[in-house]
Image 1 (tube, one colour):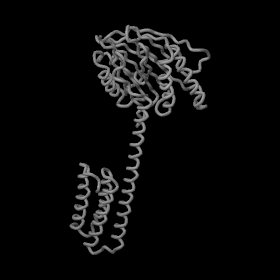
Image 2 (cartoon, rainbow, N blue to C red):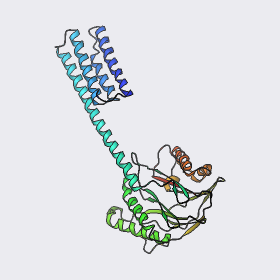
Image 3 (cartoon, rainbow, N blue to C red):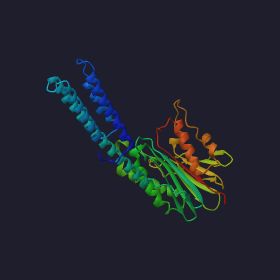
Length: 359
């Protein structure tokens, strides 16, 4: 009652009116018909929209109404009426107790969501709208309920004469994959400025993942944890973009003329698979002209299925919005992807759109 007024408080009129109607009807019907036990409906429905205090007030009104009915008929002290009053009071108290537990659960869930949002901003820093001459947008869709982070990851950083971008996918999803995702993000942000070539950068990330697995990988999951990664180096001047893939899908190249080209890659094994020899990292090249958009993604996008089991036709759908901004492109893809998957994905999904504006 001491809380600020909210429109939902008007709903309290419903149980109050219900108590009044039941009381009046019980008085008017023949004496052998007893409607007083129906008063328990009032606190029960109040719990669906009010807090513990409002529910307790309605419960007290219901008990008072039951006592008034007994007093009206002169049987307040009878065993039957006293049992009804006590039963109604106990049931009302139980409903109030349920409200207390429910509100506590809501507060805990709100705290968990707040922590998840903070963790997402710490681990998965939002990519800037512009980085050097490039326009960039990113999208993350977590598969687990109430989670905003998981095993997919991305990062971008400036180097002397260009931009380096990483997108990756830790095997698994949700909270179990966050540790390796955080490790790889931190390693990339540091190593991207220390190594002059993408193969050297990939080798440094491989070492970081291997050390992490040696220290923290559960014995029952030995050899089953790995990370697919795609590294890009986009020069400020020139139109040749270099890419090195560690088991990650190749990006799409979108042209304003509504053409979509799947780039060609020679992927090395994913990071952390424990290969016997040093991986052979290949540098692939793609022509990234002014007006083009590079669309990076994780397999949660292309493996999303509809109710008939059909995979999401990613390239076909992306071709519809090749002439839009990176932000608009990802907005359309997000809506279309969730519609295809029935509103929920089975795996985490991440997307990055990188656009080179015309000079």
